[in-house]
Image 1 (tube, one colour):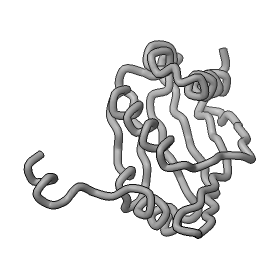
Image 2 (image 1 turned 90 degrees about the horizontal axis):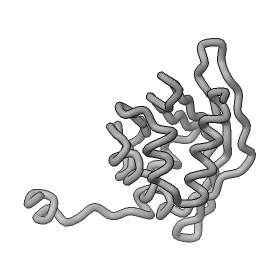
Image 3 (image 1 turned 90 degrees about the vertical axis):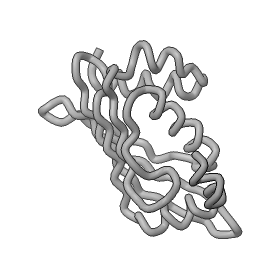
Length: 140
């Protein structure tokens, strides 16, 4: 299986909602997923549980993806280019995005998301997610 096929397998399982298969067959035990920005979903997710929880929130964000293209670099890194679309509070957002997938031992090990409109992504995500109140955050 090529590295690109591995990433496509993740997308197939994601579309079916089969997170157990992603965890068992696709993700490296030490996977990291880095989402840039200054919004509730940004940061570095470590391990399959955190990445899968991130997927659930990303699904709730209501972003639709199209114009998806893949390529594989000479070091085996898979690069995905896509366009994300979302509407919030009457505003249409377009997110040109590139994601790189580092593969180790036949599994996805390190993922980095790159976006062409970070400020737009930040605004969109803040419009879709609200932090808990200060008391609730401090209690946790």
